[in-house]
Amino acid sequence: MHFVEDIIGVKPDAAQAEILRSVAKNRLTSVRSGHGVGKSAVQAWAIIWFMATRPFPKVPCTAPTKHQLYDILWAEVSKWLNRGGRLRGDFVWTYEKLYLRGHPEEWFAVPRTAVNPDALQGFHAEHVLYIIDEASGVDDEIFEPVLGALSTPGAKLLMCGNPTRLSGFFYDSHHKNRGIYSVFHIDSRSSPRVSAEYVQAIADMYGEDSDVFRVRVAGDFPDNEEDVFIPLHLIEGAARSPRGEIKEASLIHIGCDVARFGGDKTIIGFRVDNILDFYAKRQGQDTMKTADSIAELGKTLIEKYNFKGKIAVKVDDGGVGGGVVDRLRQIKRNNPAVFSWMEVFPVNFGAPIRNPYYHDSTSYMMSVLKKLLSPGEGEEGLALPDDSALISQLSSRKYYITENSKIKVESKNEMKKRGLQSPDEADCVLLCVLPVKMK
Image (cartoon, rainbow, N blue to C red; front, side, top):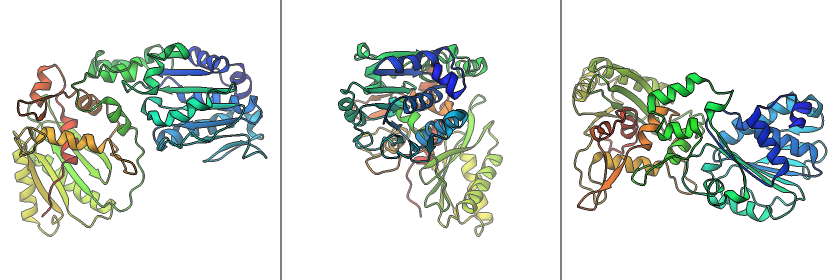
């Protein structure tokens, strides 16, 4: 802690100071917390401290995504190194390595994205500090080489994260393996860095007993009952996924969940390749305005992404959604040259389908989304909006097995009966990912 104050020139808060003391004193430190408590700063300070106080150290750093590792953690290292003017001339920071000037191969810290088991292998030295950011999202096989390296006396481990997952190396460090770790739990409500307004907004929107509140505010592991169809850690991971720049799209889909009743929202979203986002959220059921917005969105996406193909426009056809479908078809009929890109698909949520595994259309769409959030090796996962309403809706939708041994996720009405919000954002996402056959 004194190093951070004297050399870097910043005063840690009480929780940050305790974590730093633990890293100095203990081999294994594990921190679970809510959002916004300053975990990235603590990890950056620990990296700089270890580099400046050990001879020929190695500091491998990893995180589940490139965005989390480079744009957040690694950028934080650069920020605080520049703040600590006394070290600026001694160390060289690059996008790929931090090293002692003149010793790039012997005295360094490096970022390694946790995408394969080799990410943390090969770091042999008398002094090694492993930094695992957002550790709940890192697969267990990534941790295996760390276990071997930690057998040396000078090796240390600091892992931090929001507790999104009910299994794995990070979860075990706070449960069955807790005895060998120095463990910290930081509730965002106790942090001077988190506003009371943020905490109250999450509590009002989702309830203090929701998994969103548990993970993002309380820093607790989710309840995540076994009958929830898509686990929270997959959804949170997709919401944190990096969003690379797309110049020319190969696929564009638009989805629209139309409000049925006064409290429901009309949500318009779009998918461009593997990036999904929301375009508009509004109260009310103005079908003409909704259809016009969809048409304008399609033209904007075509121009922005230099798109030459057709766009599938999928609309919830239940209730007043049929009016949006009719209006879109009218728009295309009235000006076929301008709107030749538009293919309109009415979709009925909960409709029976011929499928050996899924009971209805909603269950099938949920299975498609779950697969996109769990890509195979070498495949790119779907990036979701970092939207608290969406995360809450997707992570709380339950399922059961029918008498015909098919999976059925609960309907919108069933969710409302449990006191949950109408899954408007979630249904829009399901429409965006539903595969359709273009004409």
